[in-house]
Length: 183
Image (tube, rainbow, N blue to C red):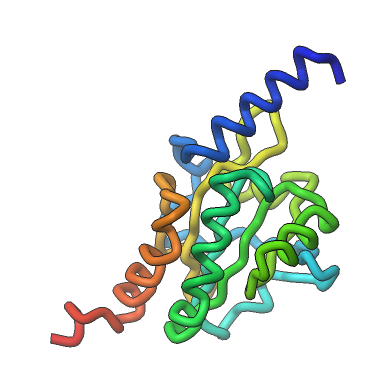
């Protein structure tokens, strides 16, 4: 890779890993069926979104690059909130265009308690409308998918430190478990 291409790619990674990318998922909106996807997890196991049907809520968060500052903060925030998220009958899955090997090392280094899913060809990233044009990197977006695999929430303005806690509140509200719905 030429020096100029390396500099441009590094600049894009820094920009998109530190801040959320703005825009809208191509045609995907709240109420739509989630795209049917199959990926390989950090541990080499297979993951199919279809396997989640009827098994509770799903948080599918897309992030640009494992090991970068914003992506590490977001993953660790989800790790720290995982027990509370699971109390809401919800599972967390992180998706990036990194390789399985890269995700495995990232998962181990930060002692993550949920699956990271590899999308090296960016097909899933593209299906959800979060692929950054020109490069095979995901925008930082989070989707909440209900047990019937319908998209119920899209966050395209993700703060890596706050995303996990915000998604807990979103799932509580959507599932009717929030304090305001109990009154």
